[in-house]
Length: 319
Length: 253
Image (cartoon, rainbow over all chains, first blue to last red; front, side, top):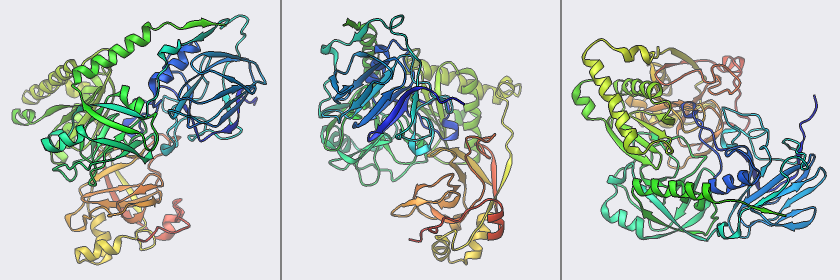
């Protein structure tokens, strides 16, 4: 059996995970969605490589990933401000780069933001697990082995002849790069057990500043700030959607993210829209958030406007 | 479904691409059957609109595709399905029964090694109930449990309802490491932990049966709507069935 060719992992970094658009349709056996925390950066990385949206990338959290190319290819990295070096020379994110077999790729550590997406022309060719390559470490599902990348892994991909395909590199103009602020507004649709929080408690929730605690990961972001009380102790366990804001007995909100448990029995005050969970997921401990109520209609409008902007923003040909 | 019970069904917003249907606030076998019936209808008639759904004790969370639908359209479609169900229930000529291939529940027997070394919370439960440990073990085996929901972790099946005498609240501080196969009780629910995980349920034994195996077919021995019965086995039988006692022991708090 010949080994697949692609990129060899020299150093896996803090937390590097294979992620495609996510795993849908397996809730009935208890599998969650996984997928990219920052969908916008993920989609841009694939677009810069001329890929179909949703193909497999590597989500690099915090940084430290180092790879050696075994094939000629084209890559793009988008997301958090993480220094990128190709063969020791600093390069910019948010554009495609031609890569030759033998080239080295090194990521430093993020100065602002947390997560970057590494896409490759044609997407990484990883075997699907329950219909998706998305890695959920807690479930030991997806990726190459069900866990994060380790040294020696090979990220298989297609060989690209850059004389024939991908002749020109593509760039997203700098004015469109997100800034990854340390303070974000989380637009939240009041939902679930919202009526079991008194109007005073809801006012407190929507007017207070919360800080991201050290317990923040792909499963959920636990926040610290004024405690919110619900008039229910617990509820019959029920399905938890992406972005749901769970309020446990200690009153400290947890925003549930891509790797959340599928069912839970804590009351929820509402759900953060996906455009804003992407921003939350770029915060680390100490980041500040405010919740702002939003109607379902406005939430849909924001979603479709963002999609329309994404579709209509043209990439620029560079060098 | 009678008219009054249909009126009690509430559809609420969950998140930007999710609605949740509530069938009431109490868990019961009757409600669970209704939940499963509606789930089948949604899977059959709304496959195009739905990304995924989570059924639980008395609710169904429906994740929909927001590129094609807004929540008003999804609500309308769900209401039509619920109405159909209620009409079909009143006249006995039911197309939906056929369309949804009503699931035939099976009874699954799960062996359990109940002992102090495999079930560190047996004593606490016995003491609280003023029963002997042997009584607790017998009561736990005495009935057939309904699989109400699957979730929380891959293969985690929520079984109910546990006899009131041995119902026990969750531990005030969850264990960091519950072993694979741990049979546990929380309130009036019981479950088998499919894998090592943190958990706050009271552990009363270990089950050697794999509750989630991605390479097996079926992946899980049970599905929602099935019945489960536990039966006591000895340590030797537990080991013979492939059971492994965690080397560090089942932590005793």
